[in-house]
Image 1 (cartoon, one colour):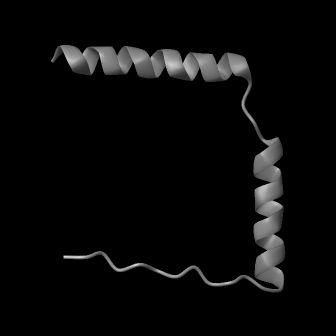
Image 2: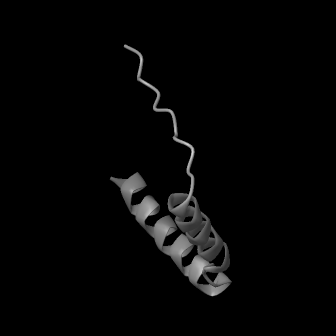
Image 3: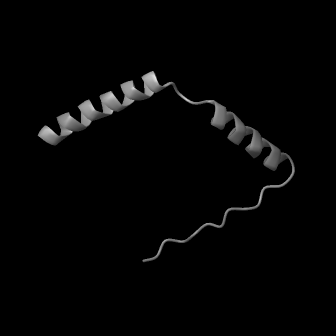
Length: 53
């Protein structure tokens, strides 16, 4: 059975301004390379443990 596709509505007015503000803050809200490395290290440990079981 096929999954229905939802068409994304076009944003206008206040909704558009709110969306653009959220996008612009997410572009500048990046995590540090140190924190990113720590996260990937933890994920690797979890994946290694699940591979053993």
